[in-house]
Image (cartoon, rainbow, N blue to C red):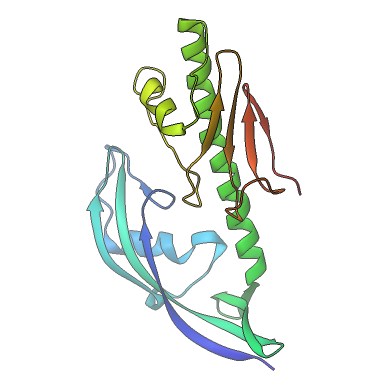
Length: 202
């Protein structure tokens, strides 16, 4: 048994969804933005399914678009409850929701590990100058010590919004993210120790 469900997905396309905007190109208009968004993630949505609310200048080489995308979900029974099984990305084009969730999880993990590696590079530069790592038990202290000289774009939290953990002494350190489950000391934690990353267990 399946159930179709129409929905409006509100999208504030900010950090992970800003659109590139080179200074030499003309400003993005609603038609161009709509064409970009209706093909987002391999979708083939009808133009009528994408509603542009605003197009505003962003920071530097980007613009920020606020939009709504109208689509449909297929629900199916799950014991005594219902679960979302598929999302429609175009005419007769359905995608299992778990594939979308897994792709998002992997991308967030990749970007979080990149943030940890940026911090690690800042710590290495700090050590080259001062002969030691930052000795601290809080990532906020590390950011205060590194930015802006050793770290131009500091970030103290992962892509799930959980603050990083840091434990450092003069000769070693450990940086960590709690990962997708937001729980510490579990298999999906992301860790960088003394410059060496450890990917989450699969």
